[in-house]
Length: 41
Image 1: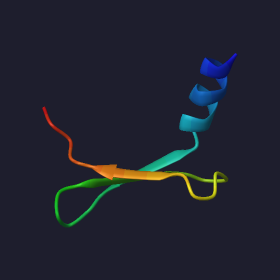
Image 2 (image 1 turned 90 degrees about the horizontal axis):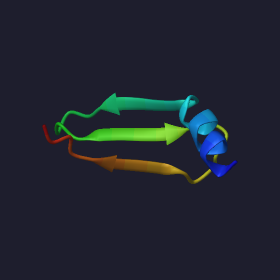
Image 3 (image 1 turned 90 degrees about the vertical axis):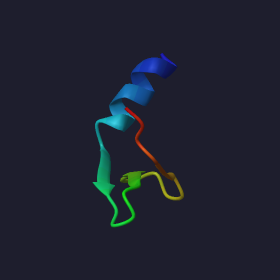
């Protein structure tokens, strides 16, 4: 059940690459929930 909830929430997430080459993400409707970091490949 929690997995389905998280998957549904992630569909609402927005992502953007910042000028310093890090990424920022947030989930609209989840006040205070955000993350940032580097993408390593």
